[in-house]
Image (tube, rainbow, N blue to C red; front, side, top):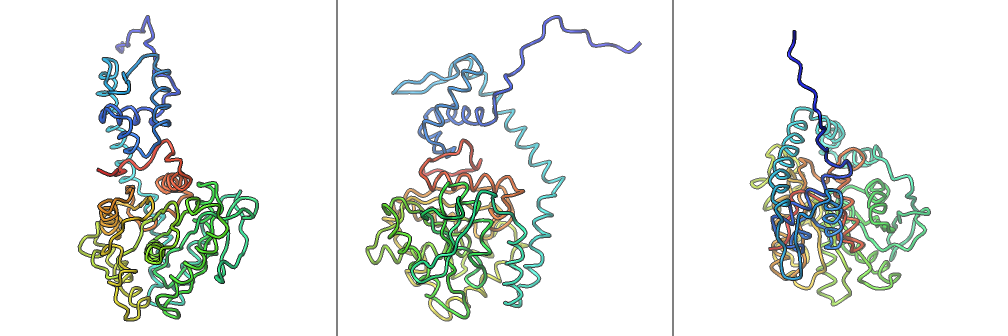
Length: 408
């Protein structure tokens, strides 16, 4: 007869089903920092939001895990017991996720299939432009987001937002494409997702592209669109400037131009996997994944097309080599396997050294501008949620990139 496990006379209580991972991650951060302010920065949360999570956890557990007053934060005995077990559980969970991804690989394979036509067309500019538009056309736009055409400072543009984009735009998004491909219309999935995440209307200028229009045509157009948007804002502080890939470099050029001219700066800046080093000093030797050398070589070609002999060390083109003091609060999001990872780190380091409130959020993804895959890539959806919260100054959502790096 098979040995049967004896039935329990008393069922041990289970963990309340309402306890979520975000509660435990918040608790571990506070327990390790013993400081709500530092823990909030580490998690990219506002202090009130972090306090709500801890209070919610204690209410669900029906026990106090932290003692806090105006002078100090310390663990209770119950908190010490929870900390050791939570660390172990979260580590096991993270390991399970990494293992599952490495075995499955469906998302990576899907991204590879989507981008393969783009890579194959890279040697012919017309085909490359068409492939870029076709790639973006495969992604959805949030159902509640519409668009309308405008002429912003003489620049053809599109506004994305609720009610058909009828709202007054407060966010300017500079699209990527190495300064040679891309369009406002092609950017609609990303612009729509950003508009939904921020709850704001987003202006995307159709700036002129190289090699037909070399530097400084793109900067001139983006600057004209920014001034148009600023004229319609209640305050410069209400305006956000966002750039993805080469659009991140374009956004930095706009900021440096505005600073040099003494013009009003936006309230916030968000850079999505920014390519800011037109001298291409960090694209090969420091890339995390050497197989991305093809992307690095294409970046060099596009830099030459855009600059047309203009020195990449021009102070208005090289944010890694100039004084960044006085710039607005900045959030830089980048994938850990992105070929622009190193220069993104350097940009944040230089900005922090200049006194700028600059934050770096890293995501465990191995693709450039992973944000465009928000419809099926959890890290992308999370990053856009974080970017939207930063734009509106909420310093939330409740969870963010696990490897978020805060200022020292």
